[in-house]
Image (cartoon, rainbow, N blue to C red):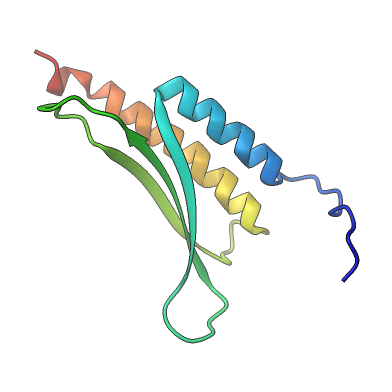
Length: 108
């Protein structure tokens, strides 16, 4: 196998995903990760993709320690694995925002 540059695409690539993860993590003071796991047993060809944000919390905090989004791939909405991962990061940012919008439930 010869080393070569990846083909140019119009969609997000792994560098874009890293940049988005760094931005979301910095904005929300969280550590982000993407997990790609085989779906089921055998050779289905499908994977589960999870985007997670981990928060360092003080003891007694009622905020969630982890916020996550997940989906399977391939699917009808994402042409590539990176498309799905990018979409999950957008969804993760939205879910983190929903936690903050419920601030009145945990603040005294």
